Image 1 (cartoon, rainbow, N blue to C red):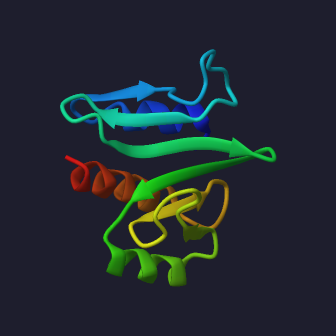
Image 2 (cartoon, rainbow, N blue to C red; image 1 turned 90 degrees about the vertical axis):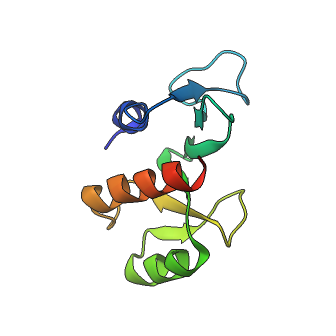
Length: 111
């Protein structure tokens, strides 16, 4: 999935919206924060660094550790609480259906 596809997928969840709190003039390199409208809590951060695309997702601490052991390209949350957030290095070994499942879990955990 590319950046726009990730954002569009996240926006399919009820009351989700796209925000750019770190970039006054968002462009294709801006960090997209996907939030819940009702509580403004973020459930996905989509960012670029050194030409790589990353996706931060909230997760259950126990499951987070298991997933990190299962996938090389799933690491502790970058710039986030390492216990409760994972970062997916996009284009790596994490299958798309697993990424979509983790997005759904993150959305549910932050309701």
